[in-house]
Structure formats: structure tokens, C-alpha cells
Image 1 (cartoon, rainbow over the protein chains, first blue to last red):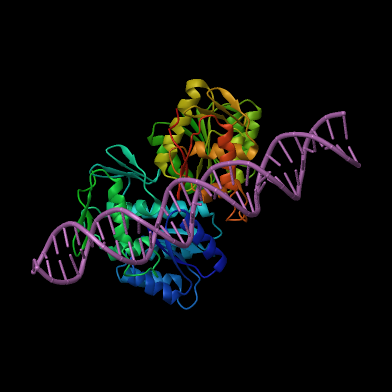
Image 2 (image 1 turned 180 degrees about the vertical axis):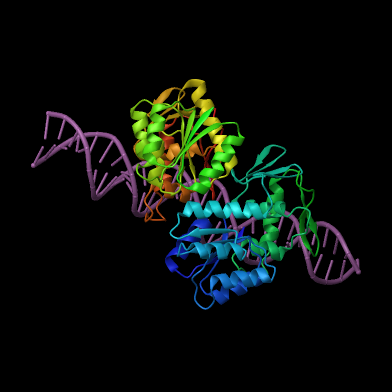
Length: 221
Length: 221
DNA sequence: CGGCCACTGTCAGCGAGTTGTCAGCTTGGC
DNA sequence: GCCAAGCTGACAACTCGCTGACAGTGGCCG
């Protein structure tokens, strides 16, 4: 899960980044409005945490430009001012949630989880693909009921593949979702990771599409 | 089944009332703290849904006054603020459950059912997970009936884990609930605390999920 | 007032788990 | 058969969580 964090207050940005990281997200943090817009326009994120008061380009404008360009990731707005009109405008412009400052970190995490789940169209907490079941609450994957002991990175990989079951996921896409964006391009870390996950699973559900990427077959069941 | 709903936010009150009504409960709704206290003190309810931030009389004070007057109905606390001390104090003061806002209606209903069932079954407000039983009124934990002598901080830790049994709780989440906000982030206090709790328990119910957090498995029993 | 004790956070060190890298190998497609 | 893509085992650096020791604090009792 990769999150774009747009916040110009260094202290808040730091705390939020820490919390998100602790909750298992990969975080790209930017401070500047135009920078934020560019990132959101060119990269795939699972969600965006967006502060409204920004230098160079206002948060609401960014939001509108993204939506106009058909960028569909869920957006959680942070606003220093608790102004009601701003909230309405934010929601109207295509934000999914609105959190007035000051907020409690646990609440941010809860709402973030909620909008990500909602955007995945996934009302149920567990996700089952074939013999595999992923329970995000327990952060655990089971195969035929047997728990599989995965490391954090392995869990994220499998989770991503399962959430996109039935479609080919490229290595680049995986890299972008598992690592911060300045990660070495020609590393074979993904291949190694896939190998490790495969070894932990009894029957291998991960199919290699040579030259394209990986795919887990079978729809949600 | 009659429920007392104490909630001053009209929007939330309306939604909850609707949901409770839909689930077949008779609902008395009050907005004002003193009003709430009087109702709870003079009428018989099967459960109370109590918001903490109230005009005129604070939710926690009401709760304590009820318990002091031997009013035994199960109480579910709604907490708008994510304040750790409030939550801990709520549970300590004799609440049976607490639900941080924002919450899903389904979850509120589920927890309400659970605490009603519990109170109907054995008139206790204790929470049992596996061999562990937690009695919030006495601030006491027993394992297989044997009392465990925990320090306040240890008790809070275990209490939090038990109240969130079946789901992974991150260290950051625990830190936020056990310490004030400006607590040092890279302290290993949580780890030490977990170690101390484990040493006091005979069979260790706390599972470490390296890279994720801690989890107590097994649902309420 | 002094000593004792329980509580709690800090610290350093350890051991195990995790993860990216690399080199050499296998495999699939042309 | 060739070659690039992908796989694998080994490895080293690193991270994470656990532990025992310790020190500061505050309460309690003689």
C-alpha cells in the first residue's frame, strides 16, 4: 500500500509519516503543492493524505485537477481550519474524507483504512482468492486454513497481488507499491521476494507471465 | 430491549437511533448530560450507549455516578476524541466496551449485542479471551481463575490487547493509547512492558508478529 | 526523616528474522 | 541453439524484538 502524503508542516508531516509507516504503508512525502500535483498525476497511489494550506498550489486546486484528469485514488483531506464551507467544498471536489486538525493519529489511520477499503469496493474484511485467504485485521494469510508465516514485505507483495487478482501486475508496478520511489530500478528484489513467497506457499498460485509480470488467477470467492 | 442513547451530535444520534430501531430496540435518546444521568438512575435499561463529550455533565462522571449507585446495565462508550486517557479511564470506570468514532454502524450493533448478551448471561461485565479474564471494575486479570498481579501500566496494555483480540495492534497504536502524545517514539518501553506482562502470565497469549505488532488470538468466550 | 519497595522508562547487547545484492543457473520463446 | 527473463542459494548488512541491569520517582511505614 503506497500513500502520498502532502503536508508542509514538518512536524505534522513527520509524525504522520511515522504513523503510516508503522501501519505498514509505503509513504512518499512532499511539501510543495506543484510537486504534489505532479506526483499524484504520474504515480499510482492507494490513497492520498492532502493538507489544504500549501505553498505554490492550493490543496483544493490540486484535488480538482487530479479529478479532472481522472485520477481516482481516495483522498483524505487535512485542514487546519475547521471551516464548514471548506469541508463541503472539499467533499464536493472529490475528496473522500475530511479530517480537521488537530486530529488523533489513530483516527487518521482508521479513516484512511476506511477510504481505502471503500475504494476497493470491499465491504468484507477478508479477501479470498482460491485457497488463499487474507485477513488484514490479523495481517495474516492462510492457505486451506493453514496460516502462512510471511514477513512484512512478503505480506505486502501477496496482498497486492491478491487485491489485483485476475490481472497481470508488472514488476515495475510492484516496485512502485512496495518501495519508496527512489528505489534502484534494475534490482531483482521483486523476483527474490516472489520466490520467497512461493516457497512458503504449498501450491503456487502466482503465475509468471514472462515479459509482462505476475498474476494470481481466480476471482474473489 | 430498551436502550438509552446519550449523544449530543444530532446527526450521529439520528443515525444511531435509526439503526437501533431497525434492529428492534426501543430507544430513549437524550442529549444533555444531567438528563442522561437522571434517566439512567430512574429507569431500567438493557444497555446504554454513551457519548463522552456532553454538555452540562461529562460522560465519565455520569458513568461513575451510575456505578456508584449500583446501576449495573452494560455501557458502551462512544469516544469522539481519541484521547488515550479517556479510553483507559472509561474502561476502568466500569464501561463494558468503547468504540472510537468514527465507527461503522454494524460494529456498534455487534458490540451492543455482545455486551447485552454478556450481561444477561452472567451479570458480569468481564471480558474473557481464552484462559484470561479481565474484570474492569476491579482492574483485575485472572488466568484460569488465578489472579495475576499487574501494575497499572501492564494492566492497561493487556486490557487494550484483550479488547482488540483477534487483530494485530501496532506498537505505535499501543504507544498512543498508553502514553501522552509527546512520548519518545523510538523508545522500547512497549517491548519492555510486553515482556513484563508475559513473565507474569503462565501461558503466553500474546503473539508477536514481527514487523507488524502484537495480537491476542481467540475471540471473546 | 530515612529506608524500603514497587513501578516504570532507558539502555546496551544479543540472537533471530528480514531483506537487498550478486553470481550462476534454468527456462521459455523465437 | 541462443538469449534475455526469471529463479535460486548464499551472503552480508541491517532491523526488530527480547532481556537483564539500572536509575529515577514516588508512596509508605517505622
